[in-house]
Length: 409
Image 1 (cartoon, one colour):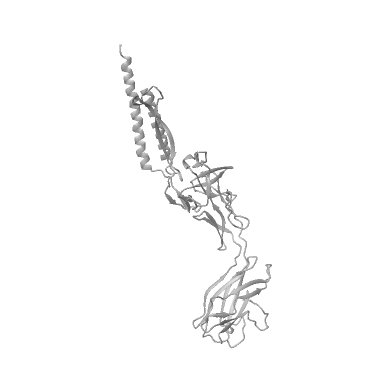
Image 2 (cartoon, helix red, strand yellow):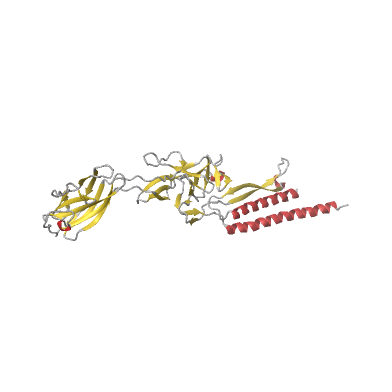
């Protein structure tokens, strides 16, 4: 019996060393979760035995349990690397099967999918036809690298200060003669094809608290054709306190000849413009159009939102990374490559957006290091070695006893 008991101890210690060795080997594996071996004693079943006289028959491995505690978050030079800070797993499509991982080292494949080193595709919430996130069934995430369509300018918000001490020019307004106007501004606007145009506005005081506003598009006057008399597009009026009282917004009809939609309708809003006794100044000049743009890069936010940044200084949402959690993560079955599959013991996957329910948040340009405590593993390795040696000593002692019995005459 002692031989069997010692052999069970040798087997248990050997398996303990296997688990410790695997932890040590994966101490540098991103997203790896260390395992812990758990033992149980063994007793022979006999109804005749008295409980007070029971002698154990050894030990066995009851379970090898993975420890899903948080690993350290380490900064990465790869902007596509993503770490999970908290609970949850990335959901991956592995050849049609769903697998789960904590390893967020991602890259783009030729089809625009976000994949890991195994070629498994990251899943999440795609965009609907109207550009909104669809939080229904998960699907493979695809980064759309097509050009962003241009958007024609429809609004311009101009915040100016017109100098109340200015005097009216002596001659009639002429876009080519700076002495015929007091001040001017220019801003770039875009047509329906994304072509840029320069809209210039000119300001001429009437000397009575009002200002005529003239405009030109790419140097061509708006609202009249020279040598006809210049026609203002609006007249801004101000109260005695210098606040704007009339003449805004201004509706501009801009003819185009480059194949874009024409005429181009633009609303010029002067809300916030003042007439004070200080120098002319442009406090703000904003327009809402932009030209077409190419995708330059994308970022993943803490909530999983994938935002594409384009060469036209615009950005748009491309999708959202999803996470999944389980009622019992220890019930997951490890399949290698730092991945797991769900089982009956783990329960079904509970998917959602990062930061919701029990799910953690994401951190881009970072990875989650292995949670292996290397110092503890080395100490445990020494202990397992001593256990193995002690059980071997039991066999040696039992052998000596057996030899003594065989030598009796």
